[in-house]
Image (cartoon, rainbow, N blue to C red; front, side, top):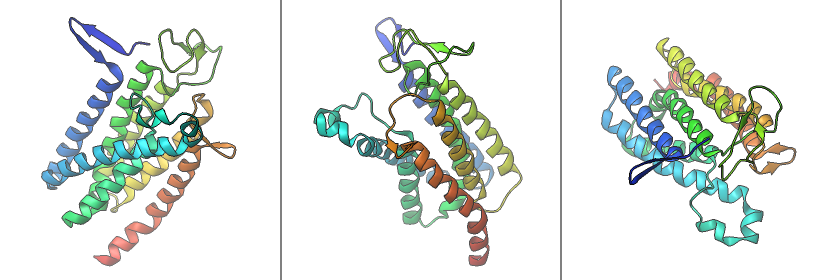
Length: 251
């Protein structure tokens, strides 16, 4: 694949460009849906900023945790910011930062959590296209017809057919976005749209991990992401069943 597009004196890095497109698309979708529901657009922008900052910090921190053995051998990894970001850390960091923001602003975190999560899947879908262009998050070797071959990647092995995990992940994220938007249109109880995202993404990520071949750290026989996915799915199931009942009681 290709990560750099040169137009005259300007070079576009596709990985960063697709992430930026994902963020902006998510913001526009969330703002549009929020206005239709009479929700505060200023709060939505505040959540967006907190999610971006919290997400960047979170994905870097989780990378440090996963790579502790490598960092001990080579401390320079700590200040190498060209790569080394873990998606789950970004998700967790963004959610925590947004939760704190909503608490400070004294608004219902769950209502905005439900509003935002379909757009998160949209952003992830674009982000994985960026992964495809850069060659990171690559799959196992394969002889199948659907395999893809990198030639200039700094991450994936070049000249070898690999399972297109980035494409599978991207398509899955866009499908999750559609499912969540459809489910949200049915006006489910508060908290269930976000809980459904946790279930869909957790199961999808756990399964996809079996196809990946990049270094992601391990917890026993599972990858770090699979271990986190189990927690996300359990939390999503509990949230789907319990949170709406508690919200109803509080009202």
